Image (cartoon, rainbow, N blue to C red; front, side, top):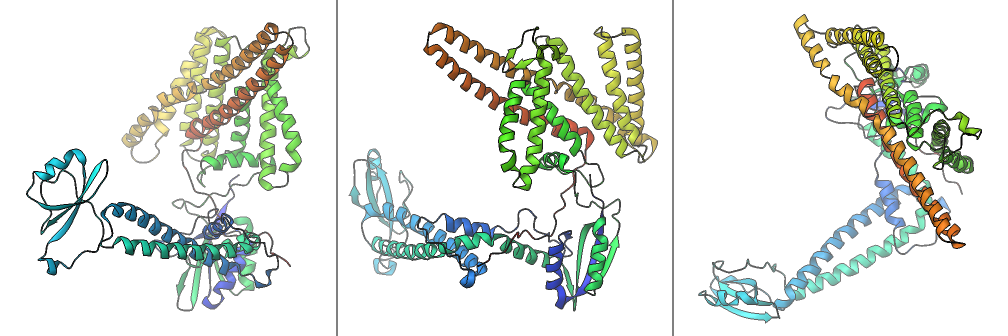
Length: 595
């Protein structure tokens, strides 16, 4: 669900600002809004990355010192600052060394020389050219004063003496710079020595890596605290902080304001404002929330599709794999990793999602009667649970289209319920009627059910639905403007048709998974029959590699296309407006180091 928010403004004395912000960070329930024009709060979840960059820089050092575990002489801020300074200095010197190496290589054929003073040579200048052997005759044809200072099997290295840049040269001139070869070689030696000294200091800092890693959250918390302090409005001896906060936390914040002699103002979000979206679901549906947040954040004024996305994604994933044997294999792997995954919050959320995917795959596989690509005989007990025939293409295509229609009807129904206090909800109701009417006409014309009443009822529903879309898609302005908006809304008929047919990918991917499994089973059987003895071993290898590849492709297709049908088709009808996530100003530090 989307947690209701309120806008709060806190005003206090400037001398108490640092302490107040630090304690608010400890509470961790505010989404800070900048009160300084043109400035935005740093994105939470991606705080200043300098501390992590510093740690990565130290850990990647080729020379690693013995770790110090006594924190008495350790200062995380100093280590961070020095590591970043070293990184920048090493990067700068490395670039200079690379430049010098290239310049020395280019300059070496010309020899070690220095440019004369132009006044001493009557303002004549030296112009350098690397001329291929076959173009040497063109240089000879020019009236120039030049000298060949070097030659190899490909080029002549020619120096032209002229007051102005020569015209007619067959190649562009070469830039040698104003430093002599000896000066460049001396400088690169100095750079190499400086780099060695910096790398030695870098290696010395690696002794603090263990303590630094344990203080990473502390550094990020401090950086975020500084960032929020830049978002407040400071005037005279007062500061003001504005933020969004969950309504359930308002009493705690008001008590905090009283305890710290602060002024707090609470206002409700206005229709023209777009607050951040704070999603919060039960543990069972928390992974659905993660799936939604992975693609987009619904607007605060909309609804939370986490539950529908969770179950529909599990259903689509199960259909695409459609093999009970694969599902059981997933369940076994999940059971073995269940306890280790429970050690982290993310792992606990993911294992619920994976359990749903495994269960859906098993159920869909049982309904299809598919077990590692093998269809059981009719006399077996499990075959009695088979209600779908994968070889009946028309029935399976019809089923997937009906699933798609149901998904899109659910999307419009949810959106209509969300807008139930507005006549604009009738437009979504109209689309529901259009989908149901189109299904009735299609099924009636296909001979499924009584044709006349289904087709007649379907046409009536489609007509009523079209009228609802026409008159209620736009609810602002005069009748003509609303009617024009309605006609524009009806243009989505083609999108509705395309979105519905998009669900045929479920059957296509299911058929591909089942066909590959059957093919590998057939190959293994042929090999085992063709080669006595070792044929069984070869067949086992084919089955192992083949089904592993098929499972990998099935999982990839299940995730990509299962999420796509939710993110593109479903969200297109259910959550047309995108918002931005609630980013709490909160501490990330879990524990402090100890002796």
